[in-house]
Image (tube, rainbow, N blue to C red; front, top):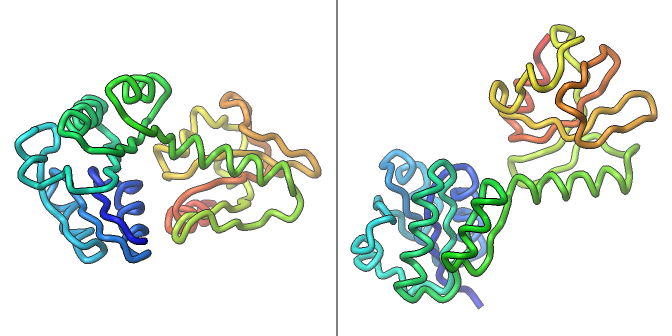
Length: 218
Protein backbone atom coordinates (compact mmCIF):
# COMPACT_ATOMS: atom_id res chain seq x y z
CA UNK A 1 0.00 0.00 0.00
CA UNK A 2 1.45 3.32 -1.01
CA UNK A 3 1.60 6.16 1.45
CA UNK A 4 1.98 9.90 1.64
CA UNK A 5 5.38 11.18 2.71
CA UNK A 6 6.73 14.67 3.27
CA UNK A 7 10.50 15.14 3.19
CA UNK A 8 11.93 18.35 4.64
CA UNK A 9 15.43 19.42 3.59
CA UNK A 10 16.57 18.70 0.05
CA UNK A 11 20.26 18.18 0.65
CA UNK A 12 21.94 15.07 -0.73
CA UNK A 13 20.29 12.74 1.78
CA UNK A 14 16.82 14.30 1.74
CA UNK A 15 16.56 14.50 -2.04
CA UNK A 16 17.75 10.91 -2.37
CA UNK A 17 15.11 9.69 0.14
CA UNK A 18 12.36 11.75 -1.54
CA UNK A 19 13.20 10.55 -5.06
CA UNK A 20 13.45 6.90 -3.92
CA UNK A 21 10.07 7.01 -2.16
CA UNK A 22 8.47 8.60 -5.24
CA UNK A 23 10.03 6.00 -7.53
CA UNK A 24 8.31 3.29 -5.49
CA UNK A 25 4.95 4.87 -6.30
CA UNK A 26 4.34 6.87 -3.13
CA UNK A 27 3.00 10.40 -2.97
CA UNK A 28 5.91 12.60 -1.91
CA UNK A 29 5.98 16.26 -0.94
CA UNK A 30 9.45 17.86 -0.89
CA UNK A 31 10.00 20.98 1.21
CA UNK A 32 13.06 23.22 1.37
CA UNK A 33 13.60 26.90 2.03
CA UNK A 34 15.95 27.30 -0.94
CA UNK A 35 14.33 27.80 -4.33
CA UNK A 36 17.30 26.22 -6.11
CA UNK A 37 16.92 22.95 -4.15
CA UNK A 38 13.21 22.80 -4.95
CA UNK A 39 13.88 23.37 -8.66
CA UNK A 40 16.37 20.49 -8.63
CA UNK A 41 13.94 18.00 -7.06
CA UNK A 42 10.56 19.02 -8.46
CA UNK A 43 10.59 16.53 -11.36
CA UNK A 44 11.45 13.64 -9.03
CA UNK A 45 8.56 14.01 -6.53
CA UNK A 46 4.78 14.56 -6.54
CA UNK A 47 4.89 18.13 -5.19
CA UNK A 48 7.75 20.44 -4.20
CA UNK A 49 7.30 23.63 -2.19
CA UNK A 50 9.57 26.37 -0.90
CA UNK A 51 9.00 26.96 2.80
CA UNK A 52 10.61 27.57 6.16
CA UNK A 53 9.53 24.66 8.35
CA UNK A 54 10.54 26.42 11.58
CA UNK A 55 7.42 28.53 11.00
CA UNK A 56 4.32 26.78 12.35
CA UNK A 57 2.02 28.66 9.97
CA UNK A 58 3.94 27.39 6.92
CA UNK A 59 3.47 23.78 8.02
CA UNK A 60 -0.24 24.35 8.70
CA UNK A 61 -0.81 25.87 5.26
CA UNK A 62 1.01 22.93 3.62
CA UNK A 63 -1.38 20.59 5.45
CA UNK A 64 1.47 18.62 6.99
CA UNK A 65 -0.87 16.66 9.28
CA UNK A 66 -2.27 14.80 6.27
CA UNK A 67 0.99 12.94 5.72
CA UNK A 68 1.57 9.44 7.12
CA UNK A 69 5.26 10.05 7.71
CA UNK A 70 7.39 13.18 7.72
CA UNK A 71 11.14 12.86 7.27
CA UNK A 72 13.22 15.77 8.58
CA UNK A 73 16.47 15.66 6.62
CA UNK A 74 17.76 19.14 7.42
CA UNK A 75 21.52 18.71 7.47
CA UNK A 76 23.31 21.96 8.08
CA UNK A 77 21.15 23.70 10.67
CA UNK A 78 20.73 21.74 13.90
CA UNK A 79 18.46 24.36 15.42
CA UNK A 80 16.09 24.32 12.43
CA UNK A 81 15.99 20.53 12.49
CA UNK A 82 15.08 20.41 16.21
CA UNK A 83 12.51 23.18 15.93
CA UNK A 84 10.90 21.53 12.90
CA UNK A 85 10.51 18.19 14.72
CA UNK A 86 9.04 19.97 17.74
CA UNK A 87 6.44 21.83 15.63
CA UNK A 88 5.55 18.69 13.63
CA UNK A 89 4.78 16.76 16.82
CA UNK A 90 2.83 19.69 18.27
CA UNK A 91 0.75 19.82 15.09
CA UNK A 92 -0.07 16.14 15.55
CA UNK A 93 2.03 14.44 12.86
CA UNK A 94 1.91 10.73 13.73
CA UNK A 95 5.33 9.54 12.63
CA UNK A 96 8.40 11.76 12.38
CA UNK A 97 11.76 10.41 11.23
CA UNK A 98 14.68 12.78 11.73
CA UNK A 99 18.25 12.74 10.48
CA UNK A 100 20.90 13.48 13.12
CA UNK A 101 24.44 14.54 12.42
CA UNK A 102 25.82 13.38 15.76
CA UNK A 103 24.80 11.68 18.99
CA UNK A 104 23.91 14.78 20.99
CA UNK A 105 21.79 16.11 18.12
CA UNK A 106 20.05 12.72 18.01
CA UNK A 107 19.33 12.77 21.75
CA UNK A 108 17.69 16.19 21.49
CA UNK A 109 15.61 15.05 18.50
CA UNK A 110 14.33 12.11 20.56
CA UNK A 111 13.52 14.44 23.45
CA UNK A 112 11.46 16.81 21.31
CA UNK A 113 9.43 13.90 19.98
CA UNK A 114 11.09 12.30 16.93
CA UNK A 115 9.71 8.77 16.57
CA UNK A 116 12.86 7.55 14.88
CA UNK A 117 16.31 9.09 14.58
CA UNK A 118 18.68 7.99 11.86
CA UNK A 119 22.39 8.61 11.43
CA UNK A 120 22.91 8.16 7.67
CA UNK A 121 26.70 8.48 7.71
CA UNK A 122 27.20 6.22 10.73
CA UNK A 123 24.74 3.59 9.44
CA UNK A 124 26.48 3.61 6.08
CA UNK A 125 29.89 3.24 7.71
CA UNK A 126 28.76 0.37 9.93
CA UNK A 127 27.14 -1.46 7.06
CA UNK A 128 30.26 -1.12 4.98
CA UNK A 129 32.53 -2.22 7.83
CA UNK A 130 30.39 -5.35 8.29
CA UNK A 131 30.60 -6.14 4.60
CA UNK A 132 34.36 -5.70 4.72
CA UNK A 133 34.78 -8.02 7.65
CA UNK A 134 32.61 -10.65 6.01
CA UNK A 135 34.61 -10.80 2.79
CA UNK A 136 37.74 -8.64 2.77
CA UNK A 137 39.18 -10.19 -0.36
CA UNK A 138 36.34 -10.08 -2.84
CA UNK A 139 35.88 -6.37 -2.44
CA UNK A 140 36.39 -4.14 -5.41
CA UNK A 141 33.28 -2.16 -5.85
CA UNK A 142 30.08 -2.45 -3.88
CA UNK A 143 27.09 -0.49 -5.08
CA UNK A 144 25.67 1.06 -1.92
CA UNK A 145 22.95 3.00 -3.66
CA UNK A 146 22.24 4.10 -7.19
CA UNK A 147 24.90 6.80 -7.30
CA UNK A 148 26.90 5.86 -4.20
CA UNK A 149 29.63 3.25 -4.17
CA UNK A 150 32.61 1.84 -2.36
CA UNK A 151 35.88 1.45 -4.22
CA UNK A 152 39.46 0.36 -3.73
CA UNK A 153 41.82 3.12 -4.85
CA UNK A 154 45.63 3.10 -4.72
CA UNK A 155 47.15 5.91 -2.68
CA UNK A 156 47.97 8.75 -5.11
CA UNK A 157 51.74 9.42 -5.17
CA UNK A 158 51.14 13.03 -4.11
CA UNK A 159 49.55 11.83 -0.85
CA UNK A 160 52.29 9.41 0.20
CA UNK A 161 53.58 10.11 3.72
CA UNK A 162 50.66 12.38 4.60
CA UNK A 163 48.03 11.44 7.17
CA UNK A 164 44.26 11.30 6.80
CA UNK A 165 43.64 14.19 9.17
CA UNK A 166 45.81 16.60 7.14
CA UNK A 167 44.49 15.36 3.81
CA UNK A 168 40.89 15.86 5.01
CA UNK A 169 39.56 13.90 2.03
CA UNK A 170 35.96 14.35 3.12
CA UNK A 171 36.16 18.14 2.89
CA UNK A 172 38.46 18.30 -0.13
CA UNK A 173 37.16 15.47 -2.31
CA UNK A 174 33.81 14.49 -0.77
CA UNK A 175 34.95 10.89 -0.15
CA UNK A 176 35.37 9.01 3.12
CA UNK A 177 38.13 6.46 3.83
CA UNK A 178 36.67 3.57 5.80
CA UNK A 179 39.61 1.18 5.58
CA UNK A 180 43.20 0.85 4.43
CA UNK A 181 44.43 -2.37 2.87
CA UNK A 182 48.09 -3.35 2.69
CA UNK A 183 48.99 -6.82 1.36
CA UNK A 184 46.64 -9.08 3.29
CA UNK A 185 46.10 -6.73 6.18
CA UNK A 186 42.97 -4.64 6.42
CA UNK A 187 42.58 -1.82 8.90
CA UNK A 188 38.98 -0.73 9.31
CA UNK A 189 38.32 2.88 10.38
CA UNK A 190 42.04 3.79 10.32
CA UNK A 191 43.49 6.29 12.78
CA UNK A 192 43.46 9.84 11.33
CA UNK A 193 47.13 10.34 12.25
CA UNK A 194 48.24 7.30 10.27
CA UNK A 195 50.67 8.17 7.47
CA UNK A 196 49.83 6.68 4.07
CA UNK A 197 52.33 4.41 2.33
CA UNK A 198 52.73 4.16 -1.44
CA UNK A 199 51.55 0.53 -1.51
CA UNK A 200 48.44 1.21 0.60
CA UNK A 201 45.04 0.75 -0.98
CA UNK A 202 42.31 3.02 0.31
CA UNK A 203 38.78 1.75 0.59
CA UNK A 204 36.58 4.77 0.14
CA UNK A 205 32.88 5.49 -0.10
CA UNK A 206 31.27 8.38 -1.85
CA UNK A 207 29.19 9.45 -4.81
CA UNK A 208 30.33 7.87 -8.07
CA UNK A 209 31.23 11.22 -9.59
CA UNK A 210 33.43 12.15 -6.61
CA UNK A 211 35.09 8.72 -6.57
CA UNK A 212 35.85 9.06 -10.27
CA UNK A 213 37.59 12.42 -9.68
CA UNK A 214 39.49 11.10 -6.66
CA UNK A 215 40.74 8.05 -8.55
CA UNK A 216 42.33 10.31 -11.19
CA UNK A 217 44.61 12.18 -8.76
CA UNK A 218 48.31 11.56 -9.39
